[in-house]
Length: 293
Image (tube, rainbow, N blue to C red; front, top):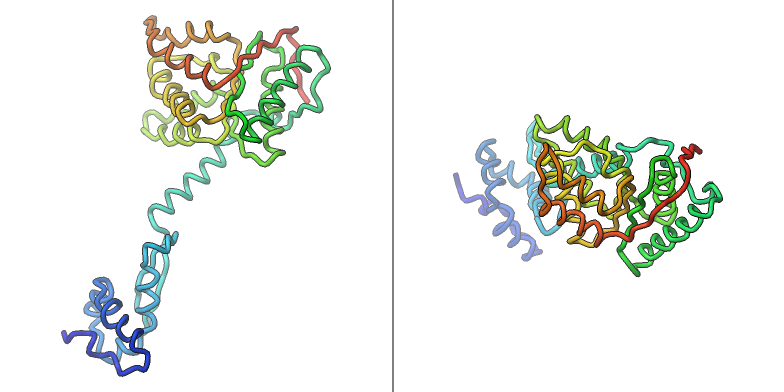
């Protein structure tokens, strides 16, 4: 085949002509397309503008989400666009991430707010502390979350729902999960080996709220491959994290250290110490009064 740059006619715009000759018509994909379709000199000339558009669209510095592809329809060159693999993965992860943000929590919890809080002294004092923690995060004064613990039915989950809505109203997009349900879903995905995507999405959330940690059936795998990576990443990146639990820090240490009748204090201490680093502890006392609003 003749050198394709020979088909360029004389043009007044020498810079454009040089660009077409030295760049566009020397592009490997364009050369391959011309050769595969047995283009004549006239064919090339008639489609110069399309080749130029295609070449520009390929420019990686444009950071496009779609990649161009040349096609031929009735002798006319067309450009079609398909998602880049990188953008496809980003889009799917974003869709999955948005779904996961509230997938593992009862819908009613997403409606809780501090205005509807029962006026007990304990909850009122704790609510003020939680609002202060949220404001510190919103105004970048602190990255510390809260570890709310106490007996079953005292309103810990209600308070976590209030935190969720307070942050949402102030422009944040927190993720909130009921930890035992999250673990159950993770276990169902182990056989397909696709659970790591879910763990990665949860651990990288800007603000994460974890309800009822310590209520799950724990194993070495859950501790070392699920909880550990989530907590380690969030502590390293100083990402605000809130927890509720029936267990104090010390009780959580005992719980996490034992699985399958084996005790591993070293790994448990590492996890609980990082939870302590991420949070301030708040004990919620009171009677068992399940609150539904």
